[in-house]
Length: 543
Image (cartoon, rainbow, N blue to C red; front, top):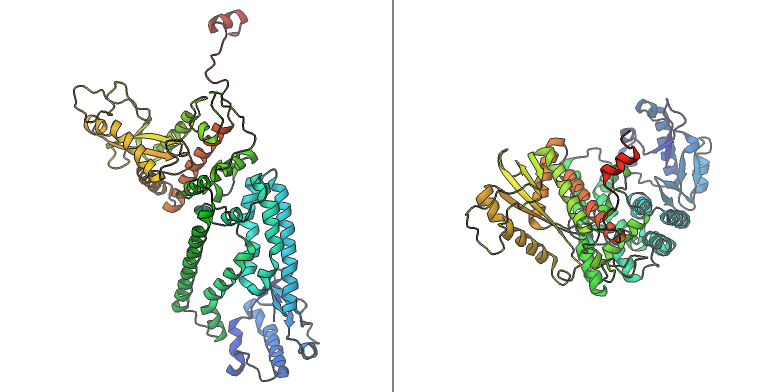
């Protein structure tokens, strides 16, 4: 029986609630389990329960409303139920009713309910696809942070034999309407659709295939709630630590099963991808590289992308060629993504580098003292620096210096930033971790001994890829920085580190998109005008 109640102080609000367990002691133990000897006896017991709720419920703030109370009977018992409850105002049906968003009742009712829900979800996805034509970032976030939870919940609470066979229209709406609107490309083939279904941290988009998730979600729900269900069936009012531990262990098991299933999907999918897409997906799987996808696109915090930028970001993620690119770069080379991310024409690599430098320096200023950018190093005056690649030039500068990063407030650390293009010809055929180590070693050979011997300080190279990955020492440093920021701001370390990675990823992503779409033709052209003092004098600007 589904019982609705109206709170005494808010009669307009109706909320479905289960029967309060404190009322069950009013019934003999033989009736508590509702193992009834005959339909008539069962109906009389339900009526007695309803009367007890009406009488005793207000003491617990429970006010049954008969007009919104439904009794769902099995087939053939509708007449007995209607006769028993005919003077109570309780609704009796042999079909079924939605309860907390899921159907209960006859198979026919559950099937029709599922079909109607799938039709409404498909319509919502179609509407979301229209929004995605102009606001793809917002539409993608609305899907993964809101809309998809509707069918995920129902897949968990409705038998998979009913759901999985009726989700095909929703699959089609996602594949043929929403995804093309998000990406600006034709509908994905089977391989791409499976790739997009992977979690963002595994190189996908997290757009799961509903018909494939139904069975897994329902079985997982049964497994996780089994301990609690058995507890309820036994009518045991003591909810102890044993039940909690069993439920937590079940959740952990389901999580591991999901990870194993994802790993198997990746192993099956990888050989089907092109070499270029395999490398792009591997780069997107680096820690923090997908945070721009999983965060909410809030303009206040600078985490939004307009429609062209969002689709360009997806193109970079999957090795696609962005739309409407010129055929030639301003430098005369062919205009390809691999080329423009490294082309110095227009100064975009320097802009990308300076974005990371300035962001890092600003954050260091929050928790360290004596922070400066581009500090000049002490000159080499007779010191013997080993290595032919050591930088001994006078006036040499690094990117950042700060006190108090690794030690006391007087212990100084120097940082030098390098952001490299993983798609460049010198990098794309090498394992990314090897490329990271190579660039770290280049920085260390150039500066580390000079910093240690002459500055008597420490040195940390900050090597990042243009796709959002970090080298080992950069990872260690940003974890340390997140820990210091979390302590000062009184926030959790994990949340602060996630926010920091997101800021770095958005800075790199916007810089890469600017390198693709930015103008290079006017870069380096001098401004031609008369002498500024003569112009001001003759035009009386000083007045």
